[in-house]
Length: 454
Image (cartoon, rainbow, N blue to C red):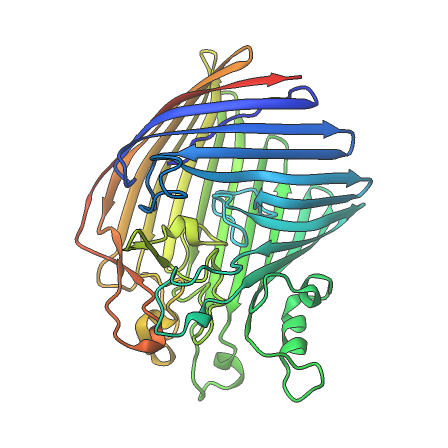
């Protein structure tokens, strides 16, 4: 279970130590500890930071670097360099990924803010802004890490480039976003350094029969957004298009491929009793997936299950998605409230999530007849239903912050990985399907943070 910490403004050289004890019905080890040590330095336009975290949650059973760290695993988050000069901001490092839209249901980069190697720049001049971001995904994948059909080279290096063009009209901002997933390379200068929309860049680079023709497939995704900042309120809308069926208009007698789209709407309202937020999002079936043969799905990792300590372990869907946190075949609704209360910062949220089957890295869900089924959304015989209530309390005492976080609710027909396909073309990648497994959810974290500067 992830813990949320508030980092307060501190001197230029800043350190922070964080620790918590946790209980969760959703983790491999129901009782576990986690902690982190942060360092940051700010000097004018330059900022450097890193965070080393440890936990005993046991998400993956193989010991971290043998038995040297015992029950704990290490990770690095928010380790990078940032330089701001005038209208230009440059960054490089392993940093949390943030979408242009500030929402838990953002579509191009997950609202869970996964951490990945990334680099790029953002330029703002008057009402116009342009952002260009590279994200490193898979590189030099360990042999035998993923399930395969005897071809170890199918899990290639992968990377992504995301571009955003926006224009502000007073309080209204309108923008265009696009993303390219490429495989066979960790970084691709031809995609990153070309400011043209990736839809065109992809087709120019992959066109056959030319001196610069290249092998390998890519996935190009585009979308639009708008947000408005009013007096005491804000609202946004975002659309992602992975594939759209134009044949319904230009050739109705031809095959009708399914629409692969996602959408997100939301807003906040400031009231005397606190800030209210409401968000909703969804995605049709097959959105974010590759269409077969090569792993260019819109995911953090090439595969959705790994071998760890001689066990097959599915990567949690919320950790796998590069974009919308709940992936395809989904509808989600979230209401939030936050306010200072009795000297504490209080945040709470009530969420309803409906999900059908998902296959981030198994094209067409073990070979479903997509050309005859057409566009689909939540038409599975059984759906997973999640109802979750989240509560976070924190209070600051000088350099110390204490916090408590709880999550309770119920999951009906829980999604579970299905490895049932015997077709080698599916590479053994799981399809996550609703099952008859249902039960309550209970999570609690108690901890604190100590911040100090030199």
